[in-house]
Image (tube, rainbow, N blue to C red):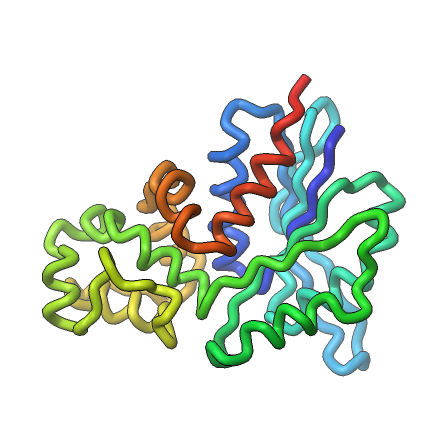
Length: 237
């Protein structure tokens, strides 16, 4: 059985990545287990792991472990804490997905360099996927989903109201994409507050074929995430 672990900043990333794994896995015989990890601030309390969704791996060809680390700065430390344990039970890939926000665009390279500092890379090299500035930039870039949220949320109307073009502009240049998404939805008195219900509504409205075929060529980190997941599923029995 092939094994992949993906450490993520929070619930939004987990919901999106879980759907992406199922889409890219297509008809693969895959089991997914979700974990929610909290606590451990400044080393005063232990990290607590809560299983929030379990699909037992027995009888499956692929197993994907999705970890919600609770905050961006815990992604690397949680990988460090669990790296050797994952290697010992034959995981093949370790990925990390986090936002840049509340840091700035100018901090992107420092975040990438900081991630690799003193992080083991043998026998598994963990890969960092950065959502610049937030994962909601990817949702903005998949602009066809707005019409599925509400038929009057057209790209033309969004540009008129907010001055940016979801079709032609680079959504990675937006400073606070989740606020942009919230503002756009609220044009029709709809809400985006990063709750599970709101995030699932948005993720379920996304066109994942559009994400795989178009956005993967335009957003480097998203494209790398897709490539790595596809490579995980490449060798099927």
